[in-house]
Length: 93
Image (cartoon, rainbow, N blue to C red; front, side, top):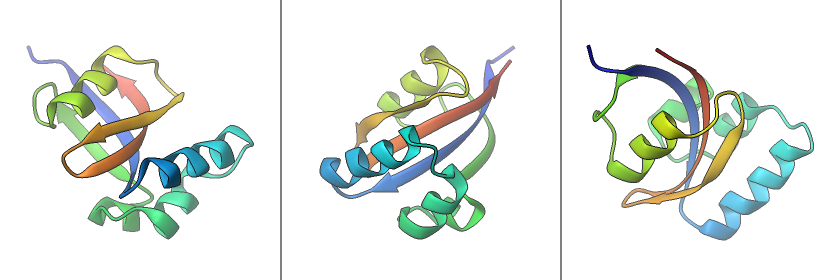
């Protein structure tokens, strides 16, 4: 059976913006609020919630970060063709 995960993300256009948001998150900022304010992905309206998805559903670098990185810790910047992501994996199974 394919691996599945649930993750939140924030997508922005520049690495600098991504790093600035990560600093805020490291200081305790709310991931969902920052996603609503800054993410250019439609999921931003849901606090960056991508729901549950299978390994291979997302673009390569994003998929790799979700399925190999730590759970419940903000990862990034992760560069894809869409821009720069901050990713928080809620769970994997």
